[in-house]
Image (spheres, rainbow, N blue to C red):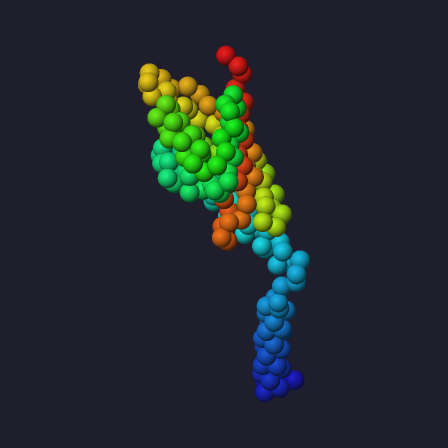
Length: 171
């Protein structure tokens, strides 16, 4: 093979490789299937819920009643351990106001499970940290298990129901 033919063969191989790369790019840029879209949507939904829990953690640790209350639906219900049920957004606000007057929280939440089904979801978590009793300035350990039921409201996830209980041994 002379030098001229070798050069043209090299050019054809290079062009063929580029065309092949282009074909691969076309395959990867095809529209996602419905299953892929649903998986992607579920992933986004779960990420939004995890972000909501992070905002709750920040607001809770800052004793920020308005920020905490903003994360709840108007018909929300709290089921705190060893405490009567708290129903409705005004009662939720009163609950957190009283809580933050009595204790100062420093908690870290850990997501255990998130399940999304249409406009409802649940989030199971655990939290650990400390509680400072305001009246005595005493710090005590805190460890809880939590279950949040969430509902989509105006395109955003909010807490609709929240139950929690301590996982520490009774004293």
